[in-house]
Image (cartoon, rainbow, N blue to C red; front, top):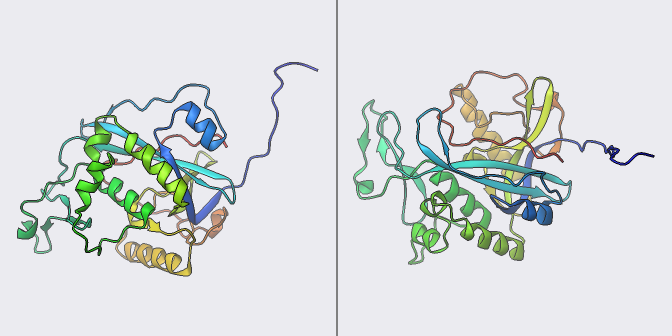
Length: 280
């Protein structure tokens, strides 16, 4: 009867637990969102550099879009990449070995930080770099036990997927990664989460890279490994999760979430800066 009447559609269910997700790209334009996700935002998204409110460091957002096609779940999260080496308050820092393992360069178990000699010549990673490395490795099912003659970081650099390239605003390497992952039907296994705020719920994905796995199908091994890792953290009063979740994939029920009763967790400076949920 009237032009401009809104069409009411039912809100899809929320989901929690491990899911095998398709990679849809980084920092997508509105056209790319429409083509790959079936939704076009009213305004062109901005991925301009931001300044951390905690440290004052300049950060380049790398917003990763993921999709679980069997249930139509689309999520995104952001890794904020910096351009200078990141060190903890005690001076420790992460490095990437030749084989691609991300490790801490120092040992503080004695109460005093001691840098390990084998990492003395390694470049400290910048903030967000470890997460980029882990994301690519999990997506392509890379093994750090690979015994070839190709070092990991030079490969990322040649593919334009390294932190420095991303910080400089060049995301072409991740467009190539999207094409490659789509062609090979690659997926990354990550826990879906639900954020609760003022009585409302928002679909998300867990941003802690220690909860990410390789694989096209979630297995009992993935579920068991995640549960074991989380219970180990909980025993020390910590958690790998900021938001509600389960270990196995299911329709969201708050009472089923292992962290439905929250406790205070000490969180580091925001490597991640989660964007608002997508409206579908």
